[in-house]
Image (cartoon, rainbow over all chains, first blue to last red; front, side):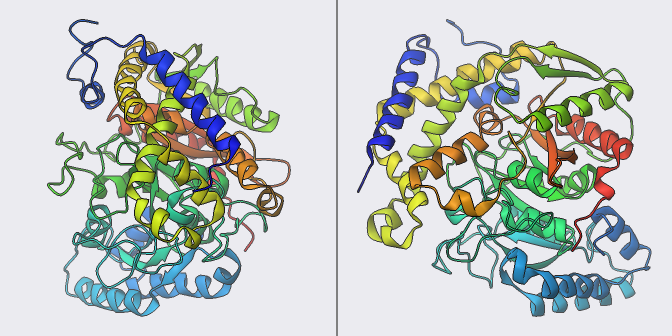
Length: 48
Length: 466
């Protein structure tokens, strides 16, 4: 595989953003809450 | 034929003013004349289409109607699996995608009486925003030769605009229905995540993929969605909620509808004529009774990054076989995008999925208390010329592709319904378009807005000079 320096930099940038934003996630946050948000099954995680 | 919408063709057939065979023959005549230039098809199935049309004609003569699309010619992006035709997914391998299950959305259209003209061009593996394809030829824009059709559902949009078929199915992982719809001057809908089953269609990113319709008008798209949408035991992500009647309220008008123009992100860096076109459309919506206001959104950049990381990770996992086994078979830009996903850690992928849930809840809660619909540009500029784009390095090309899809990608992350509607023309004669975004599963409001706008503005009555 030939990942270029630009690809590596883009990937590192994305990972950095995710890491920073994830610092604010509550323990109750999990992927399934995405579907719940669309289906209107909840307004906020219980310990948000 | 090319002057008529899908709805008009369906009505003409039902009223026996047009026969299914006549409808298909008129389309085939245009395909023969223009597809050498436009390259909307990967596999034209003229014989199959005529055979189906003859059968439907006999059934109509006997008073048997299969459904609301009886005899209407349509096309399917070549990632929808249908028995009897190979599914290349835009690769050099005719049978790249094999499925035991037919594409549910396509099958529902055929069961409602639609006639398949064949499988449509797309960017390789549905990766890419411009409509180029080294294996099957670059799809060309019907409005101006040598310009991007948008991608990845390039043939779906170009073929509708050219009058090759009345409606088409596309897929949208970061904008792949809305970008080509905008570039080719037709209407395209990315429904809510889960509204339309994705069973039997090649996946690029199971968290971001959506199937949806393209056609000339919002009413056409409503009719197609009516048939395509709904629960499907073959797709666990398909929503079980009932499908509303999208057509019954479409003529109701938009008096009192609250339309929000984002203050941040969605107009930043867009070309002046695109911004002017969308703002002019907002004024026309106001004239039709909508209440238009500015609204500040939770920063969409966060969801853009989250959606990008999830899509990259999932697409490289899904297509690891070709990436590791036959990387030389892929276009360099496609290979580079897939390779990037190999470097994403499980930790980052899972955090991104958790963030997606949080960001979606925040947007839905904060924005749709204040407005009913968001209005943004679809593309930041009119469709660009393709040759200079292709002359760029792989890195430059992919960066440009990312910038071109920056207004559509966030809504794949949020999973919200988003409708692309033509709203005029740039100085060079290329289409402009707005994107209307609504609450989860509220496609009906978007279609009502799109229909009211089209009836008033009339852009959909223009056709490319083919």
